[in-house]
Length: 455
Image (cartoon, rainbow, N blue to C red; front, side, top):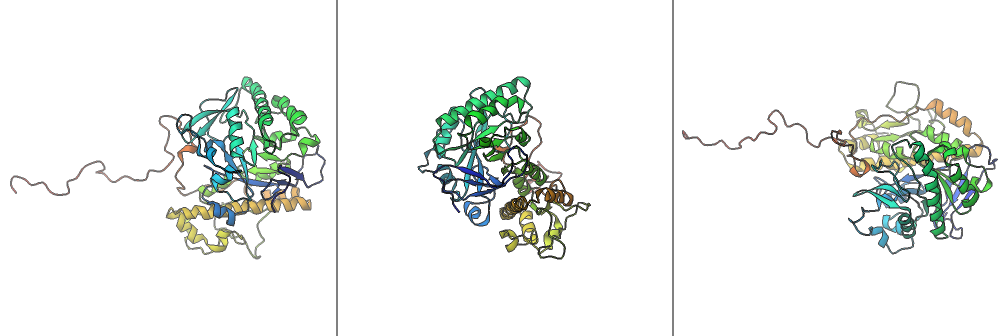
């Protein structure tokens, strides 16, 4: 059901809890013109404006997620090289949707940088942050960022934050981070349109180091911001428990690496997630198989019979589709799963696609993995509703391994714009397309014998 809330984003906390108590909660995020999002839930991560391996029509018909995370650096060319980015010329009330051909029901979340972000060689300044575009690193000022938000019209925009990537900030740097971010957020709130939803960034430093900034949000900006975006979920318990702040939706950008970390963050009261390990698993050829709180019991319809074993009594979080034992298995990726992949194809077919380096293989795994994650969050919401979340989390931790399995296949070729060069001598990130041709490699052999004088 599409949201109709007078042109403004709205969030409703559906559970009756004391705001001063740290606990999981249910909510509903309503974005004008989009499908309501029941929380806890997740936003899919995009690359270059697209959910990897899936076309817009596949997203529309084969997935359940209600929002996508997009990065400004995916749409901006280096200054002086490409002129005005094409997206700035899209004539529509929702340019970001039109440019990326997203289904109308999907909400868009615009952030300055990808998640995970590539470490920039130059730090942020008092007026700008470093971003990694398709043509290299560049600085983008808060003023320009505000102009991009105004032109692109994302459903939600995350304010510019002085966030360091790949390094631990020193004491002098930490002192500047809160002041810079507060100044940038204030400028954005003063210049944005009334309808534009803005999530205030919460920095990945301890609470005391950004207490003045957070108090600014709680005291002065709580009615102007539409949510909070955490770069470190551990800060959540320290946020002032005022009514205005407690009613804001909470988004995490600190990249949980396993379902166990997601469950911990939900126990702190987190609402919306961005989860890079879904894409990492797909690229590695790993099909997620976990359910919350535990697999279906033996003998029931949908019994889990994973052929991979870690040598322990714990169930794996996924299966490695590169394993040759899947080549003759005609069962779905996860028995009982009702996603398009599992109801239409079997392990042997998908294992063949990966072995042949057919992109359809990764597309089918991506559809499956996003479905598994959607079902995971649906089960979590049901558990919270029943008051059984804490016990179900303990069951999940007893039943499942803590980390995803390691990949065994070669996987996809790495895309260069996701990685920064480490300098001379760094190992190649992709396997060479051609192997050694033999002992005579590099020598030129005559195809026709040369005539001699005697001939």
